[in-house]
Image 1: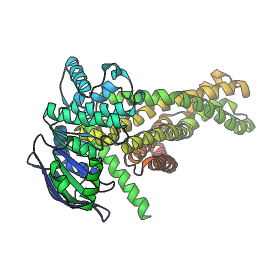
Image 2: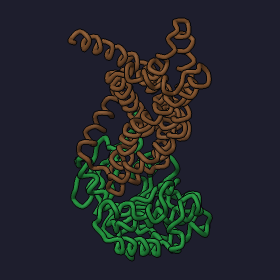
Image 3: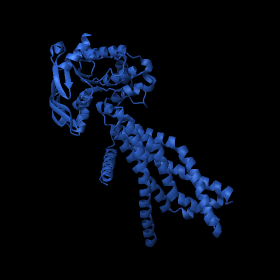
Image 4: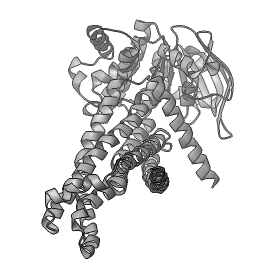
Length: 243
Length: 255
């Protein structure tokens, strides 16, 4: 489904990603771990062409992402949903308008079909329909994150990218969001890549873990094998789970 | 100098991109109408108030000159012509810089730093088409409505002050307006207003869309919008005034 080969990305001569390679199969959840500033979010943005790469190959559904034109990229992104570190909701629109933003623009649906899909997406992130007419500023940060997920899910993407989905949330909301990611992946059979520095989350939901340090891959395997790694950084992250 | 030319080039390229997208007509009409309504609705009271007092100020200034020659009956014509050709478009341009330009730059900048543009891209849409273009066109179209509102308020302001301060009756004030306010004066005013609004629309959308560096970056974009557009408006005012004078001379000679 997703193949990345020898990806290099730098910002003004400072290397951020250095020869990154990995594969994600359909329906799998890949967890990208690493300390802050190791290029995890940059990697996600490169995957869907929000950032141009310096060299390497990114294949999504046999399409070379780095070679796509702007209009081809827009088409590709309709298949990929991304949940950002911040909820990135549109302040001036109601929650219903936020969720249906992509639907209105890309699908010729009747008003009823639209609201059905919005309600279904909202239900899948465990939110009540009463909030549909509110503005994003009128709900909590945790709810905004869920709304942001609903806005992505409503387009029924084949690939889901999560950029630090639990940052800024309390432990209860964090667990709820993790469970949601797992449920959504099963329910919609999506391929997911989750970027985080939370080892516990990774252990709860990942099929595979990719560990980055200073822009390089130091671990890429099934989550069960992470305990066998001899790398000090991986070991110190893994010790957090055992505690 | 290199930085100035670099910035100028980027603004021009951004403007050309917006013009190209305008003719491709991929934006939603209701977004444009909403922008026109919002900008006009929010700025009209300020413009009318400012226009009223500008008309009044012009009347005071011309009264001081005309009294000495006993030509107060020409007050309405001269004050209105001056406002239509010069002061009106300039003032409306400045007010739009402070109100609409700063607002648009900060709104777009905040959307940029909170990843809202990236979210739009991820939903398979283009934020320039969806967000920037309706604001760009909205500013240009609204400025036409605002100019008309401001100019009528200035005539009213001049008329009221003329009646109370100089004892020039309303009939007397209005009588000479058609004599001084020839077609070229009206054209000049509207042309200037159009040029100023295009400049402002390009600068504020460019600065807002290209914000980097978090909240500080948004602040910088707002300041840059105000400075670049105000200096640009004064420069373009000179350029258009100069061009219009040459045009008027040519027309006069041709007659």
